Amino acid sequence: MTERRAIRCIAIDDEPIALSVISNFCNRIGGLELTVYSDPHAGLEAINAGAPDIVFLDIEMNDISGLSIAKHISPHTLFIFTTAYPQYALDGFELDAVDFLHKPFSFERFKNAIDKAFRRLNASTGGLEKKNIIVKQSYANISIAVNDILYVEAMENYAKIHKLDGTYTLAHNSLKNILSSLAPYGFIRTHRSFVVAIKHIARFNRQCLILSDDTLLPIGRSYVRNLSSKIDTEGNAPTVGFSS
Image 1 (cartoon, one colour):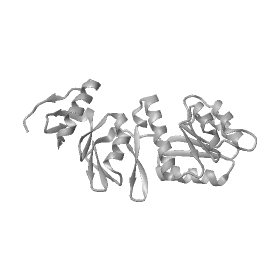
Image 2 (spheres, rainbow, N blue to C red):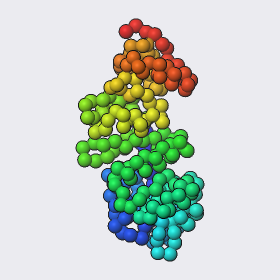
Image 3 (tube, rainbow, N blue to C red):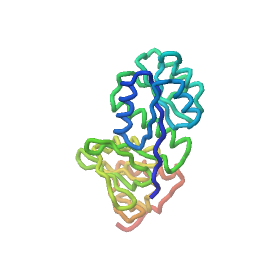
């Protein structure tokens, strides 16, 4: 199984409390290798030397603006502004920031920004090692490689994420929430209780489908047309019609 390397991050803020919050949130998400800088000039040097994946930037700092730093960042590095001054939001988005977090921001808001960054990283690299989603489990958040997922099953207030190696992760997320994260990577809802990886559908008819590992799943009547359309659009056409 391919292991995803840690996403390299740098946070620049002249307020130690703000850096502590970002560090804590990154630890809760997992898979993020964070280095913090209270000196913006040192942070900029680290960015230019290390080419991180994501940079968290305060805007109003002692002798330099985060907006100025963003202008010197490689286009291959994503950045997220973290500031107490909402009037800079337009400037931030004009610089193509991934997101603009208005202090004090919640963990959920921070996680949404990270999810956006992940989607951009995946779209720009197409690398298998970076395709991950973040899900809730107990009192933590964990990262799961998208390419390890076969299908997801709804279980009351949880989602059971079935993997290619036969194991599963029980996440405290709704199926709808999981689908919103997986849809960009070729997953589709085929039943009110199931979301599947299109590339692992071996064949299907109007009542059920068979996955690449021979798992048999039902198809909801209202989902058949969308499934057929999606498969045709992506040029992946499992054999339709089999004995069931």
